[in-house]
Image (cartoon, rainbow, N blue to C red):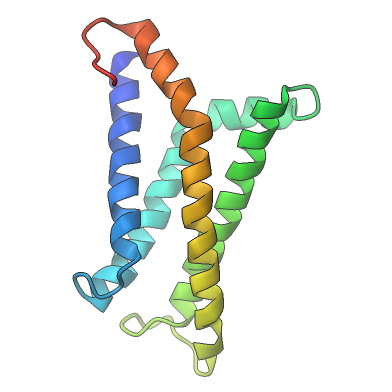
Length: 148
């Protein structure tokens, strides 16, 4: 992996982290920002997965032959994808500013909160499992690439 790709991935990770943090206070800026920001967050999450597609494919193909840590990363990533999808779908259905809301969907608000909390926990686990790997790879590539 070249330095430029590492910088892009780390920048994307930082943007995802900041946007995720902003989503947990829905009125930090405005409800409309919360809803559009949530859509953007899900789009950036998918971009993050696309940038890591080679790893996802390799681990998925060899899931039963890999080490436990790789299996744990893969399982966390699948659960994170499922929870982010559920957050997006429930968010669109209970929207207050987008034309995607459906009548009587207010009961989904509890599930939206549940999956959002699950996504937050899984994001932390994801960072923990992948962070050491990224740090080690970045160190291999440069003396000019400062990482903690």
